[in-house]
Amino acid sequence: MLQPLLEKSEALYFGINGQVITFTARISFFLADMLEVDDITATYKGAQCKMPCHTCMVLQSNLNNMSLKLENVPHRTHENMKQVINDG
Image (tube, rainbow, N blue to C red; front, side, top):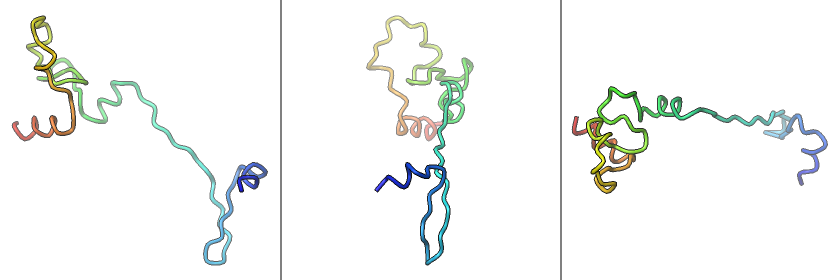
């Protein structure tokens, strides 16, 4: 079934409504480092924001708090971020 693709891999031909249409196979991908991804997803906006970590919701004032327990620092999830936005 895939032999025609191997023989003529630069194009795919499909019959639609009795007409031959040529489709070109393309693969798109998005490469980014973490800062670009964070800009796109709006999860991190620098050290001056209230919660600068891109993986959790630790407050800036608690970044150096060595007694802070992990269970007191929620992860950045869609639901948690919605709650932060709703709370203002």
